[in-house]
Image (cartoon, rainbow, N blue to C red; front, side, top):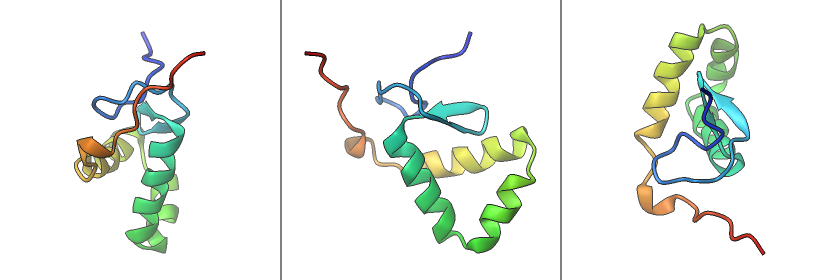
Length: 78
């Protein structure tokens, strides 16, 4: 079954976009895009042609760069 939550540890925000075969919230997706951009413009062209297994490797590499204290708290429902 697909988990509708962000794949970043301790992040309980609803999933927004794919990161390999997993999903991330909007804030982490933007962080992922920024991280890929810093890797160089070739990363965007290369990533588009990767298989899901290759994308998982890139997403796992990115997950290692996230500090757990930067994870946003779950949104409070009113």
